[in-house]
Image (tube, rainbow over all chains, first blue to last red; front, side, top):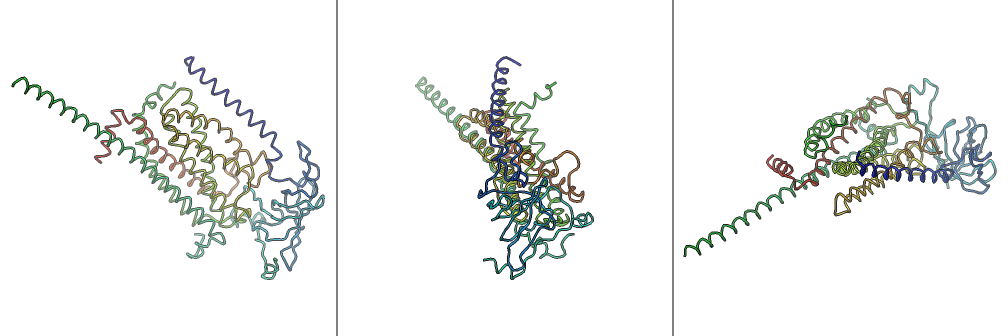
Length: 161
Length: 79
Length: 248
């Protein structure tokens, strides 16, 4: 390599390294804000690295698995309540609206709402987080992983407002 | 075959709108890319050919001029 | 060691080489994507949870993976171009960027159309989606830089530098689903080990994926030829090439 090329190479490599380091630091500084949601254990114990906890009355997103058997739906309207869990901590979510098709017990869910009590979230939006596993119905059933889309009666939908 | 009739196929369960939206936009964009790439290729080639023709014309004109000058000169000499 | 590469640094040689590749890529694209389309729309079983919206996977995932590979390729070429001052590198970057932008746009649009029925939203500002959107802007920036300078070699240099700066975004997109809490799920087919899907769903994915790869090869070769022609317009070999294509 001739000296001119060598010089160019060093300049380019050092610019790239500098940008890489800067971006790394910025991302590190922002890392709590890049997270889309808190997990239930992070709400109770604070984030792993920074210990930041949401305060009551704050608008947050909570992401966790729906605890089997905890889903209670009002037969007359769209009100629903369920528990989200991870790492042994639990947060109760109250929601008044239509659940996404993928909602089921054991499913990953993200609820967006206001933390009204230390373990209660009043949600205005519920999103389903699905996993990276895909399979046909027959295989899922043989694994005991059946899925039923949440159904609503006419009456429930009419009582929406 | 996953579908028994055309209506089932178009409905895609309840997700027809999303599935057809995705496939429609994807293939529309792919075809648009093919079309624009081919058109740009043709445009560049045409531009090159045009310039070539112009250069040829200029050369010819220059040559004619030269010839006419030389013939007029030779006329002068003869007269 | 690199001697065999030298002839390809010659614009005329690489122009004709790209021309030889085009028909192969073209017919393979038509073959693979039509097989893939029929297979995916008619024969692939629906997912047990997502139902038929799962069919969007076969467009979304290949285009999203390729949007990253295209960018990485472009960055390697831009790097070599800057260090060794290769004019052909500029032509390649200019040829690749629009194709990458289209693939990124397809990944974003199909992702939104898939997110609505599965997650419940068209768009959310989570790390994966946001960084992929930034990738689209990077592609658009590279295209804009290439076309906004009257001096092509200067525009090429600026575009190559932007390409290299943007490389930092690639690992962020790839690992965002592992580093942060996101709504987007983890990797299915690009993770180490076996893909987490049934084989009757995996084979059609491979067909679609290589169909899209061939499409890339086809369009990039075509655009590369165009770029080489327009950058060498005054050379005698280009004149004869243009004349030949006129006679056809």
